[in-house]
View 1 (spheres, protein in one colour):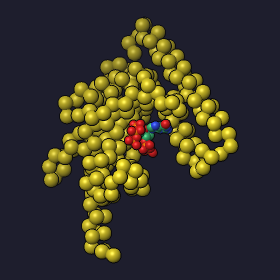
View 2 (cartoon, rainbow, N blue to C red):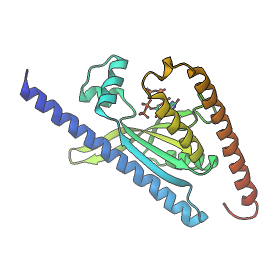
View 3 (cartoon, rainbow, N blue to C red):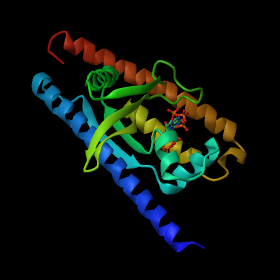
View 4 (cartoon, protein in one colour):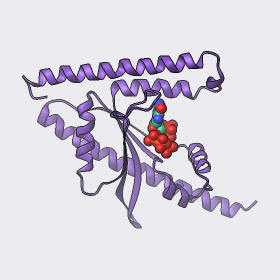
Length: 213
Ligand code: 0O2
């Protein structure tokens, strides 16, 4: 009904999404710098790979609606922590805590929240280390504190979570006959993954007694 307002809002939204893409770049560089430095000192990379995403408009809309807020640039910035998302995948469990500690010790990063689903897995078996951080990003209009969610996990945790996510988002799966069986088997596979992660960590620790790892 009001094209001018619509165009103005659309421009504001796309400007904000650009700011989140820049936030991701800023944090990704920090993580890559840590990885490079670590790999020179220890001759191996703690980070296997990094995946990033900006939350899709539809998911932003649904989340705001769930929280009881209308869709606006202000509400996105004030109410949502995970518009900018960074997933860091490591080989070993101790690498997760090394990366998290190194990042947290940088004095321009503010840690707003930590959820350790590795020490306390979710009932469905989900594990990951989640950090909500705030980092200053410099735009022409000045320094802007921007929030992002960083999920740090092992390859095993990532493998499990990716499959579980795909299955969970299949339409109507919860009403499906045999859903309880699927959930039970997913939980069982999560337990197998915990054992595998612990075993790999154990092997690394044993080798580390002879070589610096
Ligand atoms: P997507 O599609 O990955 O963006 P909130 O984020 O506030 O709604 P909560 O529970 O406070 O919810 O945040 P939490 O627990 O830190 O989880 C946020 C993100 O972690 C999710 O984002 C998922 O990426 C991941 N996650 C959490 N629990 C699970 C789980 O059981 N299985 C899988 N596969 N991933 C999980 P989104 O926005 O839900 O999804």
